[in-house]
Amino acid sequence: MLGISRSSLYYQPRQPSAEEVALKHRIDAIYTQFPFYGSRRIAAHLYREGVSVNLKAVQRHMREMGIAGICPGPNLSRRVHREQVYPYLLRDVKGSYPNHVWGIDVTYIRLRTSWMYLVAVLDWFSRYVVSWELDDTLHLPFVLSAVQQALAQARPVIWNSDQGSHFTSPQYRELLLAAEVQISMDGKGRALDNIFVERLWRSVKWEEVYPNDYASPREA
Image 1 (cartoon, rainbow, N blue to C red):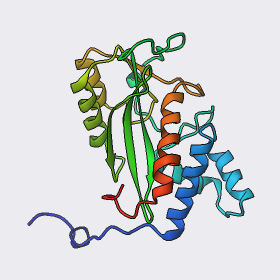
Image 2: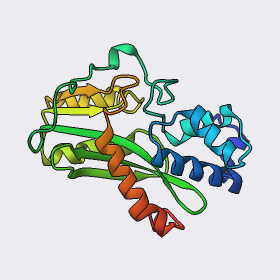
Image 3: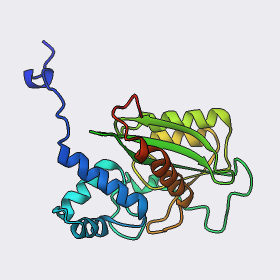
Image 4: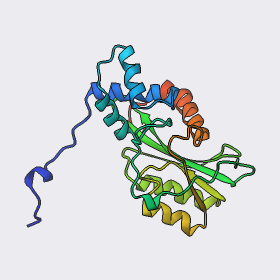
């Protein structure tokens, strides 16, 4: 009657293997230490550590983790259509006062046997985290929730992001345009465009995530 298959009805999600979890955790640690590393350099780093993994596997894992090197190279943070990409507005601009420039980004948060994703909105002048959300998938709603929470507090002049699919989505852009915010997006290969958020991620992971070794999403 419902028109769905029996296999879909009884499907149980397959938990990631211990090997996959360990490899993604190591990729995350390398990337946190060297955010300018792309998939090739991460693969080479793993090889030097004695980890047998090919480049395509590293690229696949990085896509699933939502990360990409900030150096020139393959853009693993997939964008949607060209008309949804905005120019970079911060070439000669610095955050000069509160709510002048905000940046948003998503990062991978490791758990003992799985992982989650953290999105944060950061004020470039004060380094204040305006809002954040944690989720177990890279689906769009948790990003939109963080944007709505941030805009409920204040409105920046410029809102900067990378060109990832979350930030080129119509729903994301509509929220910012309705708030009359100027949208800025990192240029491909510009290594310093998102440096403040990268510093935030490094502090969060080294000072909180890695030492605590969360066992569950609730702990995280």
